[in-house]
Length: 124
Image 1 (cartoon, rainbow, N blue to C red):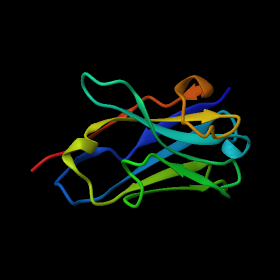
Image 2: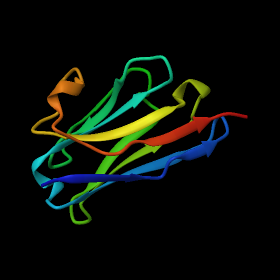
Image 3: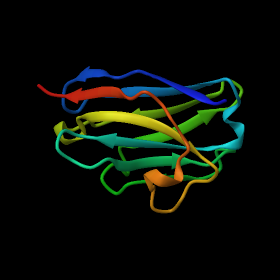
């Protein structure tokens, strides 16, 4: 039974950086594509990024392309989301999730396992 545990959220000023982590327990992440999603107050949850099971391909939403980088270390059973040049509009609860593959549209219903979510607040 796969469980995903997130860490790394917090408060940062605009232009700053944070790194989110998504660590697996109960099973290995090696079989899964891992996506990141976010949900801001009053808005629908949206896809941010996804990395393939072997780390060979990555997808990004246009809103974060060039600022966020997804990576994984399968030896540590962990996926990361490095967030640079953060903007106030990046403020959201961020979730990691596991899917058989990374879909091209980052659709929530394609992901079977979800982390607990972590708050990212970008404010001066």
